[in-house]
Length: 89
Image (cartoon, rainbow, N blue to C red; front, side, top):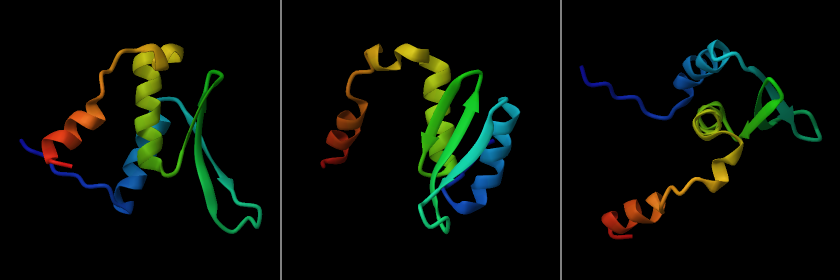
């Protein structure tokens, strides 16, 4: 079965449910005026992940869970540039 899901606000609840099921507590940081969300934050067992929206938050959590504290030391290559090069950008 093929699935097609696009980034959209209608995916925020499934994403937040998934983050919760992974054992994280999710919070928002509000701006100074307390009238807009500045960042989404997930915490578990001393780890903290911060992103601009719930979908990005899940992605950052996955990087942390896959590679741990040494995520910067992993040789990923340069997938970003490879994909852009293939697209002719």
